[in-house]
Length: 199
Image (cartoon, rainbow, N blue to C red; front, side, top):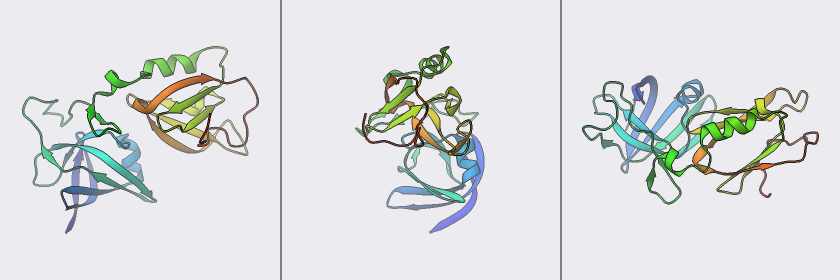
């Protein structure tokens, strides 16, 4: 059975539809709320459903179905006393890796947000390929095509009509970035920053 109402996510109130079945929580959010919250798969979030205590849950899956995003969350476990900042509804930022174990991102990251930001600010800028644990690659020919967050990157795909602007974005968890590989300085291909499957 589902319900509609106010839901707390990391101390931010949003209005959404949610269901609990088989020990899992499904939450439907508007795209604007999804973007504002900065969530991504594997991110550990503090979620509070109406009439319930906040619990720490990993985002197991996120499916975009504009104008909404469906999130699948692990079972809602009660928050343990003394963890996180209870007054703000924020807990320690944790992620769930491919091994199913919880990790503190900054301890497991090959590249920290500062590492990526420093590389993007190098002058003159040298194009870079971002390589992830899944083998996915993102070719960056302009530093403005990447926004650096505390736990993820927003990678823009340049517009075919004007490569100074992007048409779409991809959210990449920093914990999955394994390599920042220099590329030769050439004109960007039509599929730059696209999701490629090889090196």
